[in-house]
Length: 56
Image (cartoon, rainbow, N blue to C red; front, top):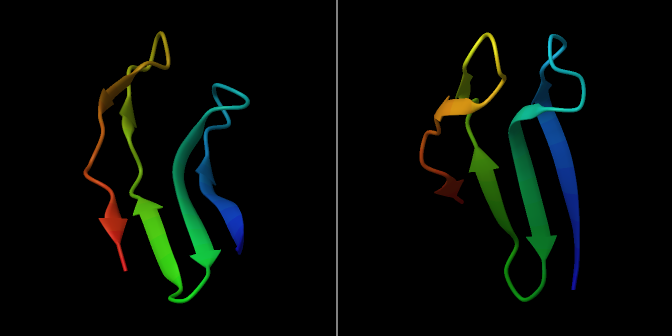
C-alpha cells in the first residue's frame, strides 16, 4: 500500500502547526481523508474547533 500526506494550510503565526491536511492511500480502493482547517486560539495556537474529517 502506498499513499501521500499533503499539508493544505500551514499556520505562519505558529510555525510548524498544520491547520488542514489530506492523506491519500492507494490499495484495492483509493481513499482520501481530509481535515478541514481548524480554528486556533490566537495566543496559544491551541485548536479550539476541529471540523470532522471527511473520507472520500
